[in-house]
Length: 454
Image: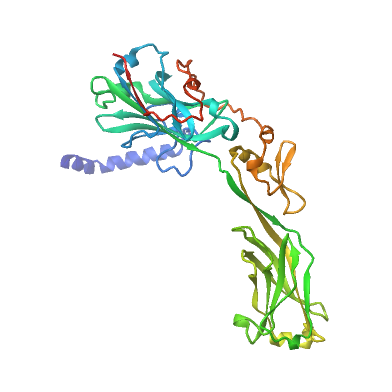
């Protein structure tokens, strides 16, 4: 190492001259950038890797999954195969489909294809799950599920796991999803991995997490209608001795409101300013957890020159009797100044003008497919009248959806027919899923199975 360093020092001059010549020549060359493959399907905020990155030499377009080892065993179903090599050397058209098992209220089968897929880098074992389509009716006509496929490695005492990075959409026109490139055949047969162990056994499994539609929601609507002002005239203002006075109720945006005045001030305004508020009337009944948004202007009117004093409010109201306003709305000095015109003939006029109000409606339904109508909800001429549209029928705001007849549901659109970018071709199954049970029947037997090819 020392001799090499010394030789490098002795050749510094020659290297410098050669480098200078090379750099000068390189500067005159036209550089062509090597294009890289771009994708519109990259997942942002993925700390591990792009879901399109090649895994074990797989073609990127088929690698919509992450693969890793984990200790936790399968959560949905497990199958142990004895005489595993027999399964791996028989006809390429062979596949194995398990008995039905229940997850998330639906019946599924687990499908293994030892000769599932061929790519430019080799052969792959494929794994799929299929949902019993007889369960995809009514409120459960379509569901979303998260899938993970596993195979046990005895040498690591862990499970090789293929995790689908996309939540899969199951419906009548797409009942099967899975991984055509679950594990490469040569990797599965590698002796150091011990996927095949203890006298020719192997263990496969699957996780299925079902995500139902939401069945409770709320809709916040904001009416930006500028309503005419509501005024309140306080007569004999100099004789008012109570701490505060509240006007009669008035209605704006489907709610009852009132004005509240503290003639001698409130809080920081006590003894120096008039305090003015708009309040949600004590007679107003709100729905549980309801809040009302208000944008408005409070005013003390100039009764001479109409140079009114006004201040904006922007607030949420959630308790009848409580309000929003100003402790120091107008000082006593300005209030009693005749030139300001606020008090004329011992009368004072206050006012509020609403510029925006909100209304909230709360819904719940047993029928999960109402979600498909969620964005069809429309408002009528007022924010208080809200309807759902089912085909040619309308269901009013406070309708109990549990009472909707089947005829209304029958008007729903059929499940979408979407061609996914990756299509798995499965051979005919030897065991019909519907023969085992209907999707409404819970399968209570042990969800483990073993195969013996000996």
